[in-house]
Amino acid sequence: MNLPSRARNGLNGVARELLRQPTVEKPRGQWVNDVVAWCHQHDIDLASRINSKALRFDAALLAQIDDVLESARLAPLGRSLSGLTSSAQAKEGVEEDKATRESPRARRVLVSFPPQPVAGLATEQRSIRDVYVLGLKLSAFSALIQVENLDSFYEFSTELPALSGYVNPLVVYRGDSLYGGGFALLAEAWHKTRRTHIYAGDFDVKGVTLALDNKATHLLLPNIEWLTQNATPLHVPAEQFPYQRRLRKHLAAFPPAHPVRDYLTLLLEKQHGLKQQWFDGEMVCVGLS
Image (cartoon, rainbow, N blue to C red; front, side, top):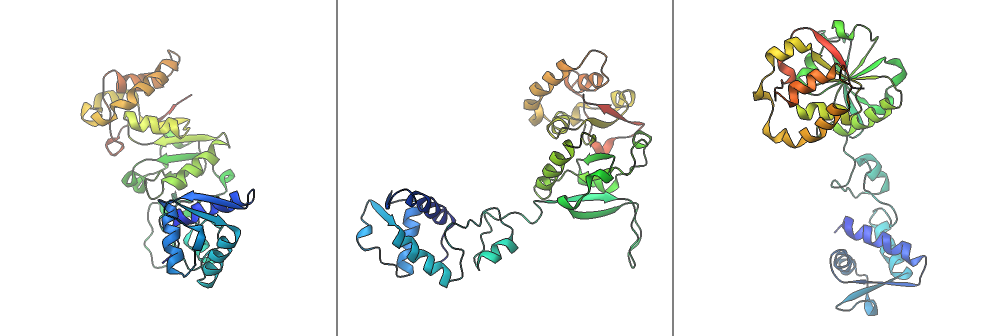
């Protein structure tokens, strides 16, 4: 029986308390009962330390627990497995805690690069790579392009007049449960560079809100004339209505002549939107500041 993670966390807290006092008493229940069951299974005699209401901890008991953990090649007390990768957990012992480990993709993103020929593989319009966020040299890129939808990401082309002013833009899939964590790290690091961050995603309330949350500086959208003709109330989901109040505050903050006002008015006042996959016509970069 592995030492349950909540029991390990509780014991780590007790160890810190024992630095200030000789004994610590904890009421029976939850993690304490996990410790009791684990001690009984490993023949650790709790003797006078236990009664029906509480368990009394001292340094000698924790030393016994650590001895059993060491003999079983498990991480000693004081070492948390939470947030570690599987390989990092392996260095602490043979125990694996999948519930609290860091996801293998937590620091990785999907990036679209110019074509990179590979022997035995047909050349595609773009080369898609799964990369480690900290392995990206951000100074090599003139702009970050955040693509919201995976199918649009695979088809995304930087050969647009609206993007002609950016040399070697970094095109990244924003991700969901798989790559979202890695993108959040990248977006935070990119924001510190103070360079252009373009959001390419759905023209709807949630999409624009995501762009603002990720500190995007521009939206990549069809020009307002085309969008006015083609946006539809069918692409404004009812479940996104709660986002509208916050977006209206942003609309009110823009000066009267700001170009983004026409887009937000179309979205919020006329309740017309459009999914990224339906975009066509001339694309433009619309400032968000």
